[in-house]
Image 1 (spheres, rainbow, N blue to C red):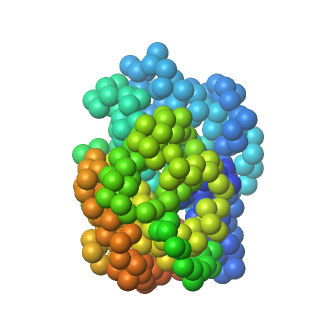
Image 2 (image 1 turned 60 degrees about the vertical axis):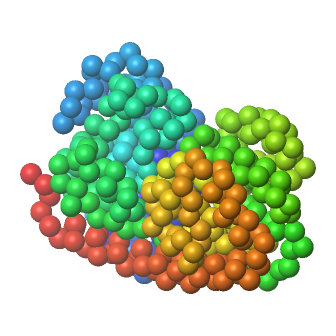
Length: 379
């Protein structure tokens, strides 16, 4: 069977999807399956001209909205690039972004389409203060889910919580299959080490949705309690300067290291002790599984896919979002007690190895692909 994995971002970009799909491709190729990756290069801008038509709603009422106009133009660009580059048929197309999915179904209507919805663009925009809940951008972006449902032969997502999130926007949420992300354990190499001062690390894009402002306030409280630590922040984004200013304001600048963007943080993580990320929302939170495979103790918020990965007090610690005091309490537990921290990390590693193995994902995807290929296309 020959399968096309249709991405939005090129595979060298950071993030759970981009970091996972090339490893999935490698495993399938070793099994004798054909699999290729496809994405839209960043250099392709304002090339597409074809009209966009959605089956389940009329988007033309949103014309003139800058964000929606940009989304539609990106759709047109994806059409233009796909027509230019794809010249052969595939048995199945597996798309990992709504634009990729809808374009592929438009251009190859007779090819079975599998779609994985990995995250919520509209929720990220709301949390980052870019759009308002219930506003035109929100209504447009959530309408896309019903369009995906109408076009996909199989609709999937990465966590039970995100399937619940999608429920109001689709007709048959019970048909959405959940396959959590999987990771090639060979990429992660835990290293025995003794840090005199507890090393905290977070890896994310520096945007409001990730809650790093809450983390800095929690670290300020931790410092006041006399708990020594160093916080390492890997990632970049629009609020980096704001976070650096906040660190200075909270008298934390000497306790924090801002690294900027790093392509393979998993090569760096094993030297640290605790992974912490107080996200305000997270469809899955791939970086938690990656940190667990590096044998780090996990501290996260009780939201979305994070809460499905962490059982509080067993393989990590969960705190409410937006609660710096509760986060400081959790961090104090893992900073003050190395044995407790070690036990949490070991339990997290055990679960990640069992539940988030790449082999599990390969097995589940093989079953989905065979089922989709065997059934008649949707009317």
